[in-house]
Image (tube, rainbow, N blue to C red; front, side, top):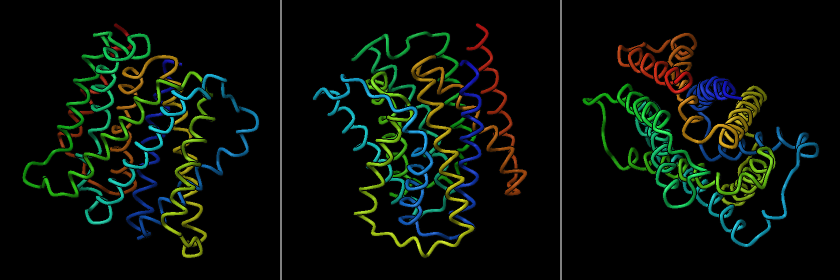
Length: 284
């Protein structure tokens, strides 16, 4: 189980590269892509939901229903901010804002450990300190001072990262009452229904090739989120997040191989720091 987030990091990198290819090279409308991607995610889980469905009676308590409603609301807000920023700003310019999500998760988990439950959220300094170091290194590797512009789209992307982190940390409060696939299915199918109503997307505009690419991306995101949820339940939020931060290392490699993007010394330095942080937290 301790090495499962390593596969999650690989899935994160693969999903990001596939998403960039669809959004950048296929020039798909963001609203249509969002609806299609959630449809792909929902369809991917549909055959398995009959075998792995699990929802305890505690999940139906008013308080826990309200928490799940908050998770969906936070997800919607995050997607709205990300959609707004991606519509008007280049994806590459938003990377420093998107990369804040792991650090937000760690900081929120620490806060929740004092406000809610130390059992659900870690306080182990041998994990917290290397996770914070890796998070800062990751952000440092994506900041280019002379290119960084704190316009309203960049700020929207920061809010998107924050609300995605808030969604994940809040999810831990009720994850025990569901199987990870049940939780993710309800979350994504709810967002799909809202997206269908809000955007009235026409899937006929998508070519067969783009549909297959979106389906592949949806499968990857299902694998990624299920690994994250299993990690949260079994090895903790902060340690899982630290392991998932290996993802950008794969992203650097995949971007260099498949997208012909140049590797900078900051990327290499951050990769070394993240690997050392993961090894310290794993072996300490």
